[in-house]
Image (cartoon, rainbow, N blue to C red; front, side, top):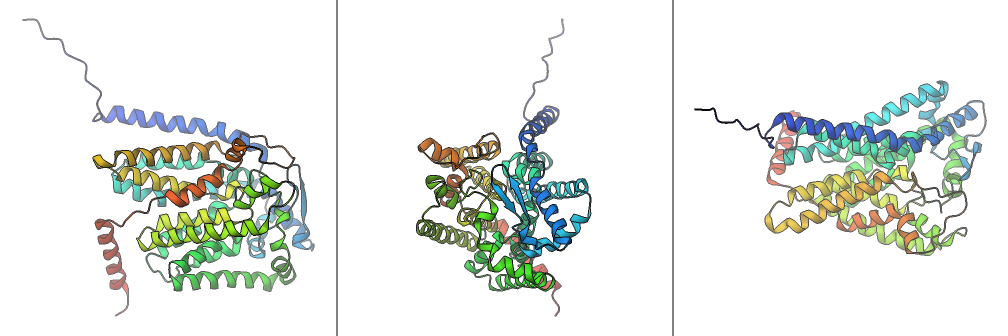
Length: 429
C-alpha cells in the first residue's frame, strides 16, 4: 500500500522553538526602535550635566555657587538650582573629564532603570506566571523608550538615582519595618526637595518612625552642607529656593504641572496664585487620601505611585524628566487587567488594558521630543492645544482617580507572615 502523506508539524502555542523566535523578534524590534527615539534627544547633549559641572568649576575657584548662570535659547538664563547637599555630592565629578562624568551618569542611570524595573515588574511576573526573562527584558526596553527616561539620560539628570532611593525605602524598608526605613526618602529629599512629598505620604499612612527617620536624615544632610558651605546654604534656603524664575519658563510645555497648565492660559503673565493653591490643595488632599488607602490595603506600589503623581502635579515646576511615576502606573494597570480574569470582568479587563496601552503610547511619544514649541511664550488657545500641551497633567489627574488599589491576596498575607516570623527569629531573645 502506498504510504500515507505526512502532514507538516503544526506550530502551536506549545511549540517552544516558535515561541522563542517570536520573543526574539519582539526584543530585536524594540531594540531597533530605541535609536530612533533617542536621536531627537541628542541635541540636548547632556546640557543639564554640563551646567552642574560648570557650576562646580565656578564654585571651586571661590565664586558663590548660586551666582552661576548659563544662557539658554529656550529658557533664557539657567542657574544651578539644586540644594547645597547636591552640590557636595556633585563636586568630585567636577574634577573628572566631562566624558568620564557623562559615562558614569549614563551607566548609573541605565543600571537604575534595570534595578527599579525589576523591583516593580517581578511581583507581576510571579503573580501571573509570565515568562520571567522575556517579560523583564521587554519591560526594561519599554522604560528606556519612555520620554522621561530619554530626557533623563540625554540631559544628564539624576532622577533615576532618586527613584532608586525612594523605591528601596517604600517597597522594602518601610513595609518590612527595617531600622533604616526612611533614610532613602530623606537622602532623596536633601538632594532634590521634590521627594519630600513622600515624607508627607509616610505621615498620611501613620508610619511615624519612618517619617521621623526621613525628616532627620534630610535635616542631617542639610546641616552637613550648611557646615561646609554656610553662606551658600543660607542663600539657597532664604532666597534661591523661592525664586521659580531661576529654573526656566513656567509656560514651557516641558513643565507638566498644574502651575504649568495655568501658565499656558495666561502667558506671558503669571497665573492666579490663589487658583493654583486651591487646585494644589484639592489634588494633594484627594491624591494622598487615595495613597493612604492603598497603603492600608497593603498595596505599597500603588500608594507610592499615587504620591509621586501628586508631587508632579503640585510642584510649580515639573519637567518631563521628573515624571517617572507613569511607569509603575502602567505596571499596576497591566496587573489589574491580568487579574480581571472572570467572564463577568471582560469589560473591565479591556478598559484597563486599553488604558495601559494608551498611556504607554503617549509617554513613549512624549510632549516635547517630537514637538517644536519654539522660544516664544506658549499659550493655550483652543481645546486641542489644551490636550496636546498638557497631556501628562491630564494623564496624572486621570490616574489619581482611576488607578486601582490591589487588595492583598491570601498568598501575599502568608508571605508577609513568614517574613515577620523570620524577623522575629533573627531578633535577640
